[in-house]
Length: 255
Image (spheres, rainbow, N blue to C red):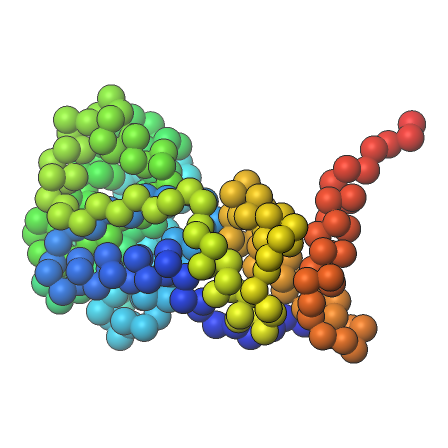
């Protein structure tokens, strides 16, 4: 499928995430970012890491069902030293020796540590993250869905996790529904006129229920359809593509 090169779109989510990351990096402090899925958190975090590469910013996406040794191993793999070690303590030493006050550690999807790991593993992983911050003084950004917000600040391990949470100064809770200005910014990125009327109402409903990520995927598909027909992308083409996907999802068996 032919895609339009749009780069990283300057949405409000992207700007907010960048501000939080910059504050954590410059001030050497933890920042917590919470928001719904498919609103652009991960895209913005990975772009910040790309722009602040050369070892300054380290990005790690938490996986489901991880344990403390798995977290240590995955984090050690992000550095150029210590990855040949097999002992957990040696990997930890490599991490402590690699991060400094001038680094930023981003841990994305950390709610998975609270929801998919055992209670003991969740405690151990969060305590290790706290130890990394305390021993290295690096900037720290922890990003999660709203599940992470309730799990970190109001779950059964609230008192334990409070030791990490209290170290943070920046707490960002992103809106569940992106503002219309983000829709307009995305439309401009695809060289489309600003949506209005029924088109805008449909897009607002889409991003409310599915997120900006799906909206952009629909636009990319519409762009490919328009290119194949040797025409220009328009909201009419977009509507046909969206209706096609809706019809596909509504198909019922005759048997």
